[in-house]
Length: 228
Image (spheres, rainbow, N blue to C red):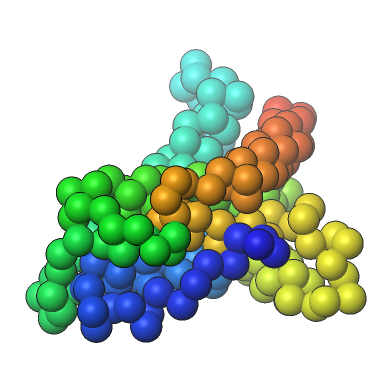
């Protein structure tokens, strides 16, 4: 219940290869997926400035706001595609190496394989949405510097710092406000019925981070002197 920390799906994989989807998402979400998102988001604006193409992009009558929105949308698409790649690859490997069939939910009930696939797709979507707040932070950092590598390093460094803070029990008072705190709540999709409490908290928290850091990125980018 604390932050939606899900069960150990890996132990179920040998009985049903379908669980490799959830095990793979649980293994990659804390670090690997957000690191990839941090690299892409951090390079969104700073990378263009570093390569000298940002000024030329703004010559077109698109405007800074539209360019920023397109950049953020592209990062969100990357979040979804990266998550789907992990889920589909895990499903293929699980079906190849282990038996697949009806799925036993965390609640102990059984659902058909078709409904299980729907739950897996919903889980991938939840994971992608969970990365939206971090993507907004990365985009904001990208507007602060003209160095793509610097922006990527700062974004990934922030991710590591937040993960460390979230693991310190003495800081439990601030845990619910950290963007990564409810990431593992995607496991609640595999409950019967779906447990929405931590999922809704996660969505609300991501929306807050998107609003705050998206606005900060817009304010910074629209007032920034473009020299490259």
